[in-house]
Image (cartoon, rainbow, N blue to C red):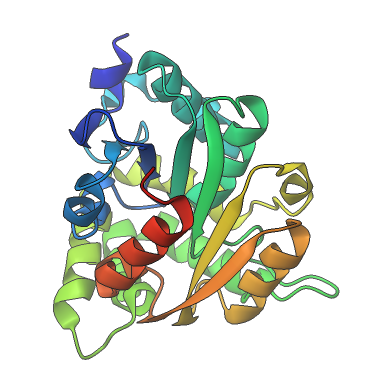
Length: 266
C-alpha cells in the first residue's frame, strides 16, 4: 500500500530546511497542528500525517491487533519516515504520540535525532510514587463511558480536555475531531492510550529531548512533566503560558517558538 496515501502524508515548508515530523494524539489528526504549521514552515520542512484509524488515513489499512499497542503506531511513524527517506528529523509528538516517538527514535536514531514531547504522559494511572493524574477506577469509568456512547463521551470530554473555558470554540473543534473518528477504531486507540505504561521506555531515550507542558492540564499534570524530565538525562522541560492539553491550539505562538528555540534553523 502507498504509505503516503495510507497515512494522508502532507509535506510543506522549505524543501531544504531541517525536518519536523509532527504527530497528533488520540482522537485528533494532523489538523491539530494547523496554527503552528505556518510559523514552522518558514524555516523547516514540515511533515504531517494521520495515524491509521484517524483523520483521512486509509481506513482499509486498519488492523485492530496492530493498533492495540503503541508499537503499532510507532510502526506508522517508521514507515512514513522510511517512505520519505527522512534523516536527522525532529519528531514532535502530542500527548500519547510523545511516547510513540520514544519507541520510534529508539529504532531509527539516524532518522529521528531529536524529540519534542508536547503534553506527554508515560502513564495516565497513578502508581506508587507516581502521579499520572487518574486513579484506575477513573480510567475504567472513562473507557466504559467511551465504549458505550462514544459521541456522547466526545461531546462531554473534549471541552474538558481542551480547557480554556473562555474560548469555547477550541472545545468545539476538538469535539468535532473526536466525533469524526470511527468509534470502533477510537475505542481501540483509547484503550491503547489510557492503559499504556511507557515509563521504562523513557530510559531508552538517547537523543536531545524537549518537553513542553501547559501550566494547567487535567490530562497531564505538572508532576508528569517533571517525571519525564527526570527520566530522560539531559532533557529540557519548558512550561508554556498555556492551559489545557492542546497548547498547539491554545497557545500556538508559544508552542512554535519553543520548538524553534530548541531545534534552531541551521
